[in-house]
Length: 239
Image 1 (cartoon, one colour):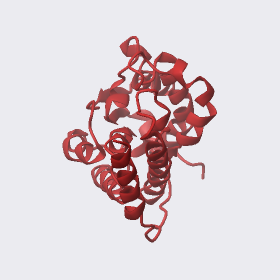
Image 2 (tube, one colour; image 1 turned 60 degrees about the vertical axis):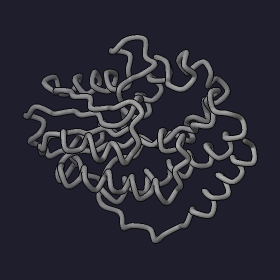
Image 3 (cartoon, rainbow, N blue to C red; image 1 turned 180 degrees about the vertical axis):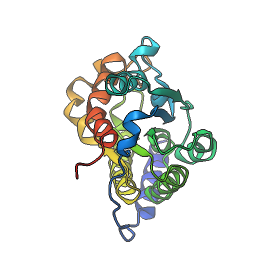
């Protein structure tokens, strides 16, 4: 098993090739007219988007963010398309087409942890995530997009010790790849890798009983990190 893990890590390293950096696009914020419209908030992604590990639906990441949005946009609506276990490729294939096209839409994306756990190479993940945002931006040319980065999946006590270095490295690389894709497609990026290490000393107390998903406090920290970016894309830039 250890030999197999070493081979997997070697393959990952060999497949990690740095390509040319894509040009950055301006951050897309909702138009001023959207302040008078009904904001459609949609969450796409995996079990973190769905809120697994929370003690109640209103303690999930999506519910916390939606509650914050409604403080300034009281008529906002919410849909949660998150599918537990979904990879980035699966999210792009199964969830994006369900988003209603609107110029006054906010989409929050949480994806990548399942790619890490399947040991997808950095090149695979970079391509998959760019494709996800490409499809999302094509559906919402003027919509606001916030993408959550990747925490260090290797910090989970459920990850075997011999896979922790690989999954930690993949998480860090994936977090950076998500940031690069966000810049390319005018989305706001919420980095999580560094944040997970700031909280690493108490990571066990931020996880639910399954040792994988955040508990209520873990989701509160995620939502707190995301809120400035959410408010930023909901507010039109000053002239």
